Amino acid sequence: MKKHNFSAGPSVLPEYTIKNSAEAILNFNGSGLSILEVSHRGKDFIAVMDEAQALFKELLNIPEGYQVIFVGGGASLQFAMIPYNLLQKKAAYLNTGVWANKAIKEAKGFGEVVEVASSKDANFNYIPKGFTVPEDADYFHITTNNTIYGTEIKHDFDCKIPLVADMSSDIFSRPVDVSKYALIYGGAQKNLAPSGVTFAIVREDILGKVDRYIPTMLNYKTHIENGSMFNTPPVLPVYSAMLTLRWLKENGGVQGALERNNAKAELLYNAIDNSKVFVATVPNPEDRSIMNACFVMKPEYAEHEKAFQDFATAKGMIGIKGHRSVGGFRASIYNALPIESVQALVDCMNEFESQF
Ligand SMILES: *Cc1c(COP(=O)(O)O)cnc(C)c1O
Image 1 (spheres, rainbow, N blue to C red):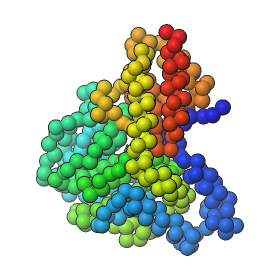
Image 2: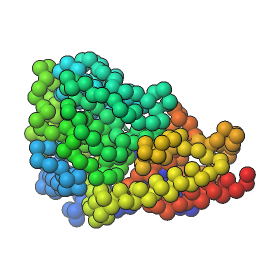
Image 3: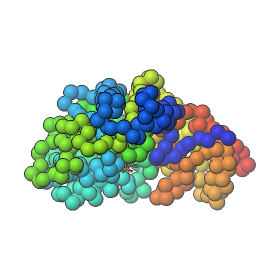
């Protein structure tokens, strides 16, 4: 039976990425050696790193003055690296859920943190609006896509102080005006590659402004100056990321991705909104993520939650159980998920619903 992979992360990747990663494990560039057993300083891997960085810049139209780096430690290490490198006195954060909270917790270890606004009062089911960012803060941190709650900031806004964004789960899902950001980062395992590599797009002029000693491996400058090769990079995830970006380029770039993602999100949210059994957890369509759609059963059908889970599993739906802090269901519909899979889920919901 065909599996439809709605996992939140690690998650679905293009078949092109999976097949060619597998091939490189067996025989990298026809060398007769595995990519797993050759030097990262050899010319074949240096070409991979160069192409991955070049495709990042090309596909996101990254302006001059920015550097793309690949490091380890996940987005979670960036929660600490950002204040380590940027927080001199005070930083501003938008609190939109679990990941934002983890970022806030780390920043508090380095200075004063102002929580500009929060959607905690409604279990983070909306994006706060109309907040004021203190102009004397060193930077303002946002989480553009809240993977757990299915909310998303889908536009790039102006900010008078350096804007830092966790784009772990929506990078490459839409065109981004990188010039509005000072730093964009994320773990690769949602839309790009297997876990193990973290990307950061850094505007160089924000660095070098804090007084503290920054450990070598946690200093952005180290990775920029050494082309992400200061130490051994996560070789296979970088290779897979490069493949995913090649695939994206062949498929209309980020504009093509946005059109496909909008079509998938519309199909799914329409089905939820027209359902007598299911209801979306994010009421405002403007705030709804095009990457993670969260829905629950209406109270009068709540007892059938497990039955739907089992029904969907039997039909090949993988990873639709909601995060424990939201409950219900979450369908992650990342770039590589085909619309046919969304249609299969919608058919499954409709079929389940027809018994009532
Ligand atoms: C998954 C996720 C993280 C955590 O990423 P790791 O690479 O596992 O540290 C952080 N932020 C967001 C928005 C995420 O979706």
